[in-house]
Amino acid sequence: MSRSAAHLVVFACNWDGLTCIEAAAQAGLSYPASVRVVRVSCLSRVHQGLILKAFELGAAGVMLLGCKPGNCQFDVDARYIAGEYEKARMLLRLLGLGEERLVLCHMARSDGSGFVKQVATFAQEIEQMQPAVPARA
Image (tube, rainbow, N blue to C red):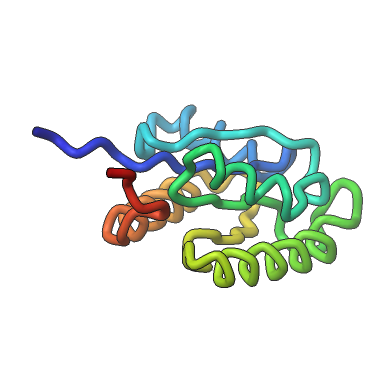
């Protein structure tokens, strides 16, 4: 019996984050099929409640993919998301899910190969961890 891959959610900003994913596709690069991309206008729109909701709905890991600091279209991304990221990691630790299930990546526009490398590494790390939520008997 094969083990199904754990789903990963990637919240990608509409600008540099999504451009990385599109660049990967245009270059013919692939990333794990377990990755689900959620486009947001800016990572400043992602708050700790939304991150935790992804875990509640079954995500084994969440990646926040945004612009490099200083490159945000709205000039708020890096400052805002860093705080929400830390709050969400603290809550994951308190809930016993493991803060390592949440990562924040700032990538340069059109870095498709960098995105594929980051998400593949993250997917591999998640697969090696115990399940986020114990299976019910």
